Image (tube, rainbow, N blue to C red; front, side):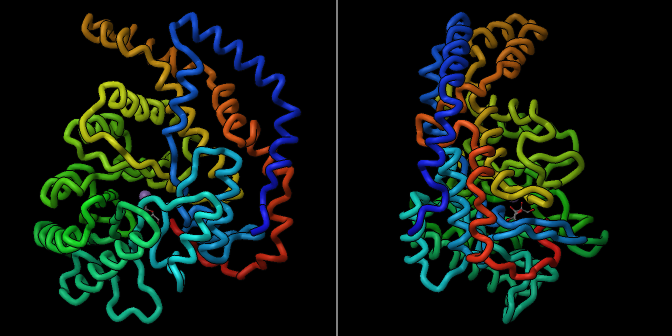
Length: 430
Ligand code: PSV
Ligand code: MN
């Protein structure tokens, strides 16, 4: 297959910036050394911090009002993978793609797997979709899927999830992410307890189909598309269900799916403590489930969440192995650029969290020195780790400046004729 992002272009771009990067890296190394931190140890840790790209994020999203497609958008799963590969070639921290079925269904999954292998991509968690009706579908999900009052509808939704596991096996995945749109729009519409009983019954049937090495990620969401109540509305309900289902079931935290001002980092700590943290859908928000680019609004919150994760790593917390994914909707930016930026921003928070002196922090906590404890976190957060991120990318074959390199490649323009517009400007994924 023809290389879409030329490795020589990355190399040439890097040449222009590598001298000043070396200097910045060395200078930061000296500064960190004074804090007892070895920069080479820190940079190595990035090798095991990888973030999956959501296949659906490669297309322009939209709101329920409109979608404004860009040029050369991917028209099928293969083209989505090409875009994911482009992102990974530039950032080198996104070698996995999280697919969504049936959106990503292809005739030959083995061919898709081979295609991904050739692009040095693997598949992350499989997302099932029972929140919308597909052409030719027998039963409608208008009034819910896994929790629907009708057994026929529930069975159809269960069957889809079981198929997702089968497809995921071919793709080499090892987890299923279940998010349902089920809920109600008016008080009285749905019996809260009966709906959750039906959810548990349906999910336990899906759970039985999980291979031994697979996990099931339960994703909660407070509102939308149901606006009065959702069946799996918060992490409490999600973790209760995960506990009911068994050890392979865990709670997935999408940063946009909480009530305003909820202390998400604390939820994360609780889930880690009880070995129930599945992983993340990273994004950012100002008002609700805005699906904005990661790290674009609440960067300190993102850092505090990553701080809990690094703390768990440091403590070698039992059963700690979360899956990291982005889940964003790109309405006004080039999705590739947003995904590049976002993956780097999540990586940045992780890196900053690695700089926290955990012994010192513990001492401040034990001495009830609230101010110094907070300052210890701030010291890490306020450190500009850009040279480490850039050096990591350069050493791994990626771009020192991924956005500038991507722009200079004229990627979209070059693909314009190969990927003609499908004229689909209907509302997108919210
Ligand atoms: C729902 O808002 C969600 O966060 C779930 O993860 C879906 O699978 C995804 O967005 C795509 O619509
Ligand atoms: Mn999500």
